[in-house]
Amino acid sequence: MTATTTLVSSASIFAGCTAADIDLVVRAVTGQRHVAEGEAVCEENDHADRWWIVVDGLADVTVGGLYVGSIGPGETIGELALLDGEPRAATVTAVTSMELLEVRGDGFLDALRSSPSLALAILREVTTRLRVAHRVPSVPRQRGSTEEVPVAVSPPVAAGPTVFDPRTPEFTKDPYVHLAAVRETAPVTWSEAISSYVVTRYDDVHRLARTRTLTGSAMTLEPPSEKRIPGYFMMIMRDGDNHTRLRRLMSGVFTPKAVSKWRERADAIVHDLLEAAEGRAELDVIADYAMPLPAQLIAEMLGLPQADTPRLREWTRSLITGLETFRSEAQHQASDEAGRGMVEYLDEAIQDKRKRPDDGLLSAMLQAEESGTMLDDREVRAQVMMLYIAGHETTMNLIGNGLTHLFRFPDQLERLRANPGLDQNAVEEMLRFDSPVQLTRRVATEPVEIGDQVLEVGSHITLCLGAANRDPRRWGPTSDVLDVGRLGANEHVAFGGGSHYCLGASLARIEATLAIPSLIRRFPAMAPAYDEPKWGQRTALRGLDSMPVSLR
Image 1 (cartoon, one colour):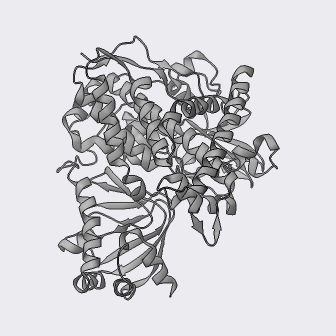
Image 2: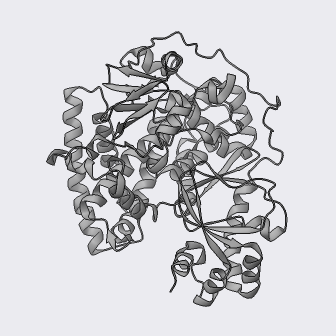
Image 3: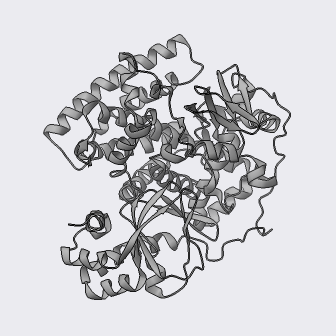
């Protein structure tokens, strides 16, 4: 079996196809194509003469500048235009570096004519794409158009402190005034408060998030103590070959296509939560909606008992508090205690899944194999903890933050309520406008040049994702305005970038795209039942502790 045959046959789209079917595709393959992050695989209105099978990496799909979906390993690019004989209708842009198999367009069509199984496989793919495409506005607003420009409110001005210090109540309430002042002062500044250099401009953050000479954690450079072992084995704490191995093992069970299978279940959970709220006059969006959705879904995905969800949720919240730069001794102790409890629980769950495997994500992680290697128990446990910490909290924050700002921009609330075609793009704009993850740390393994400064090896560098996503150099004069129809909204850096691009991005998008539009349409009279949003006292993660709303 050739390497190309192995790659084609392993693509999930060809499940159920025979060796003869696979051979028809292999004979039309012209070679492998590497696509760098940020490069377009294909663009709208291009002539369609080829087709691609994704071997590795992720890409975003936009139509008329509006985000409509993502594509990952095992999926294909370009089949619709070949089938209908028209120019390409969408632009596909690499979010991470990608490896593709390139297939001649005529060879692709010949293979479909020769094999009913291949034709059925492509039909399944096309049907999925069309289900997404029908939600896209038929006439998207063009770049530079003044149609449907959102009503502007007074944007923050660069009048705050020019030294990064997130310990003040004013910063918690609205960090963007502070961040704008820091951003306009210099490309990089030193912060005594967090003992790190701080980078706030979009171009710099975008570049450095993807720079391989910056590690994702200081743990890469120093041996971990026994106390730090669980965190050390998390993928986000590793770099180089160790990170690549973990990511490849995990990505096989966490591709956009694999995660999309859970969309129906997420929709059902949203429906149940809304049904439970139907007879009420008030709802706490965080406690009653935004928190239960991701917590319940990730437990079901992993194959863990629903009865255990409350304590897993409490452990997660304590662990997140312990990760903050500024925390009390009591919070630190609570985090340690939660870590011990969660480790003990997951060790028992892992042993149970080894004896009685099921079709859940935890069993899939135990069975995942890449180049002859598998995850050991410590690695599986660490990745599960990562999924709970990263997936549960950030999705909850995305839902709460997004709804908060829809209330601030009522014209956009009504615009989204009236136009389901904007659902997915609106979530991208919410990610840009108030990023659930505000900061991400890097450590320099080589000298780093930022503007006219060179930072030494070993320098700690904090990338301000929230500040970059509001940079007027990138987003123009409306950078501080929420625009659910913003073209290019998905070019934000809320999910990071490069090798540390958020693995759970697809899941977060699905949950938020279902949760926010469903809530605002189910309760059209919904209004905030608070004077000021109650923001959590956190630095790296931004979200609400509670969000009471009136439903009637």
